[in-house]
Amino acid sequence: MANYFTQLFSLMVEVMLPLTLLVAVGGLWPRFFPDTPVEAARSLLNRMVMYLFLPCILFSVASTTPISGELLSVPLLVGIGSLLSGVIIYVVLYLTPIGRGLPDATRAILIVGGMFGNTFNIGVPVLMFFFGRDATRYAVFNDMLMTMPLVWSIGVWICTRLGAHDKAARPAVWRIMLSMPPIWAFILGTASQQFGLTYAPLTAATWFIGQATIPVTLFVLGMTIPWRNLTPRPEILSAALVKLVATPLIVWTAAQLLYAPMGEAQYAAVVEGTVPAMMTTLLLADRFRLDSRATALLIGWTTILFWLTLPAIMALGLIR
Image 1 (cartoon, rainbow, N blue to C red):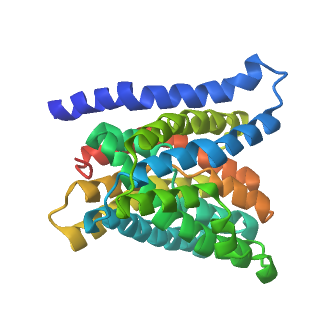
Image 2: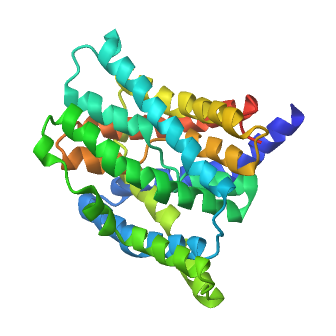
């Protein structure tokens, strides 16, 4: 028990404190600098992340990471957790009184939000705390091989079929994915590693540039959360608890069944299952005219409650 509290204190100082400060600064920035064009600033910073910072760090990690069965177990296990969590939230919102009377535009986006987590921007600092800098590879391969394909296929299907009820609105998934610079950076990095073309100075340079990804994204997250309107609605908290509690439990159970005894990669998958809802959900809500307010609330509540549920998951021994 003493070791648990020692580890928890270190986690709070090394990880939770800087993450909290970055999100808080983003939230307070418009208040102290009211002349800030918030929407324009968010758009600019998001573009810098998408077109520069994130591709650089993905290339750097992929170009130095050999692909193995252990590594691929992370997207597999987190994918299982995501899909089963989506089923649970569907049941809660469509078949119980919690979701009664809610518009489909709200229920659909809450399902997507509860399925997919912020596995890179919040997952990486936690992974590095438990397993060291090289653990970044778990988040990178999970995002590229599980999160992005499922978000732009199953996630879009949920948004268009359950939420917008517009079959014609479903975009060409592969066209969207192949237009994203992070995808090409990951492919190029993986190819360079597989063909023995990794160039250490370039890897170091792209790693250096990519270090801005997480601080900038967390700052934008702080600007995105509707701090003055964090209403604790039942449907929001239900989806949040599934994301923060049920998902890691599902991932841990699947790891026990498929990979016992569990190794570092499987515990890393549990860490990836603990993280709050991802910001891309808000993009999907805007694109398909779903409930953006509910999406922002889910992102806000999962981010806040994450500081409580992660220590609980650690106390249960699901992360080592």
